[in-house]
Amino acid sequence: MRPKILLTGGSGQVGYELIQTLSPLAEVHAIDIQDVDLSDTLALEHFVRNHNPIDLIVHPAAFTAVDLAEEQPELVRAVNTDSSRVLAEEAVRRNIPMIYYSTDYVFDGSRSFNLRYNEDDRTSPLSVYGLTKRDGETAVRTICKKHCILRLCWVYGLRGQNFFQTMLRLYHQGTTPNVVHDQIGAPTWSRVIAMTTAIIVPKILNAPREERWGFPWGTYHICASGVASWHDFATAIFVEMNRQTGHNIELPKPISSSEYPVKAIRPKNSRLDNTKLEKILNLKLPDWQTQLAWCLDAIKNK
View 1 (tube, rainbow, N blue to C red):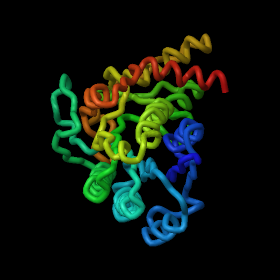
View 2 (view 1 turned 90 degrees about the vertical axis):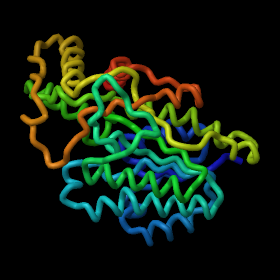
View 3 (view 1 turned 90 degrees about the horizontal axis):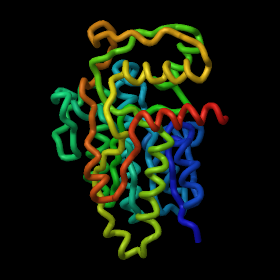
View 4 (view 1 turned 120 degrees about the horizontal axis):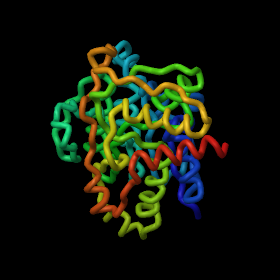
């Protein structure tokens, strides 16, 4: 009998890709806002309790509009923190594991640019989004011992609103954007995140039950290798699009964070250390340039 996975945020940029990569491994029940509103914890609890059976909860859904989150903190907390608590409680009630996706925004980014954050470093979020995701982590970690928290960095994809999609739109409009050069991280394609998850999930579900609980539960960083600024990432997109189209759209111009005011403060250094992922789970993600090339190829082949 195939294992059954309850997946939140099935239409999101990570959730959609997870449906594709996890469906060959298990029966995936993907839910979205039309099924249950994650901000309504009672409705969510009722929905999950009437959804049987489940062998694993995978929870990438979140309120990710970082600036808008500053204006709606109560809603964001309900979606990002309270829903995670409810799902963790349901996982414990069923004695099943849970995978929860978090973010580099749990850190304040004040670390020197030549250093990366590891899983045990102190969190100090600067924004409502980062705070509510950090509190979601805490809820999952405290309630559900059989958890796998996957911290992501600068996620982009072929769906939804994200930096990559914005740069493509501006390119096709012939617009040269001003892009921040003093924030660094590792742009990571949502499909690679989903592919990595699809390697982790069988390690959990395919083992005999008594061995399954010996899985190295905990927090892992999952992001592309290498480092880039937002300006580096935007420039790489424009360079490749110029190469593909034969056009010569002017490349993005670098500006400082102070020249691009936003409501939510972003971490200056979002570099995450993947060493734990590599040593314990034997997984290494490609560098951000390779992932970008794959993503652009996927657009050509659609």
